[in-house]
Length: 303
Ligand SMILES: [Zn+2]
Image (cartoon, rainbow, N blue to C red; front, top):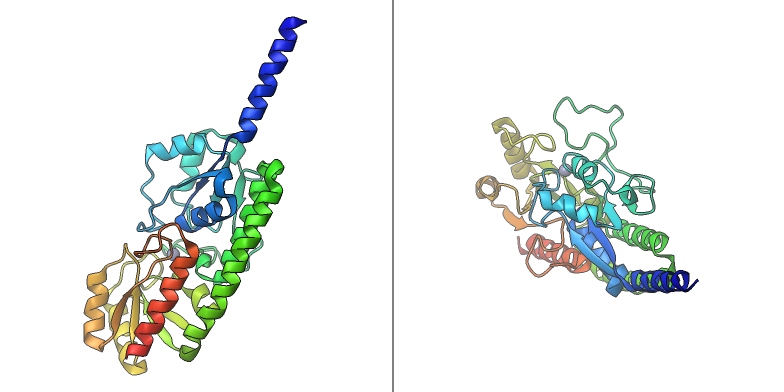
């Protein structure tokens, strides 16, 4: 009896300890990581796999990522094939049942989102990286709102004791977003309908939200390197339509964008999908969008 009591005490002590321990959250990309930190606060320990300066389609999968996934309570991924080239083998290697698809510990943000550019027919034969629709949906702040809600629900499902904490932090963050959205709309409103060029088709959600057109790309198809024919088309279109800005992400050829820009009088603007991809935005999704909107508005106004 005494021994039973002792083990019961130990068991309860263990349970209390684990209740105090932080949830280990692994996010595939830094946008989800930033939101998990905002919604989870002190209750979560967040690690992000892809660097914010790394092409999310081609992440350098290190063995240490398997260890992180093995120890994770929660995985947050886009779930729209952005990570399809590198995440599945890491997940298999992690042997962590908590992160299996359909488990509360597996949060796929794209669930419940309306995807853009979903092709009528699935066809990867041409090397198209967006075979199931455009996976760069987090560039629309409304989708950021959806993601934060999904993350709060997901964290609560894994850690029900802290449901109210997550809900409260979510509401606080959504208020910040509400206020920012008003400012951003004002900043870009004068440029409604303006066309902007990009290296890769990462910005249709951003463009739709802010009434821009970002549908001219140096890449002939997502993931296919710029060809002379494509560059000629871009040059001609930029001259004809007086397109003033090419946005470029950290892992894309700035040299190539600069060459095109030099021949058309356009500006090359550093853009990023991920907090930390441009300076001063580390770990902060709202700061990133702030930077994108502010620098784009300035570049469009300058010409
Ligand atoms: Zn892409």
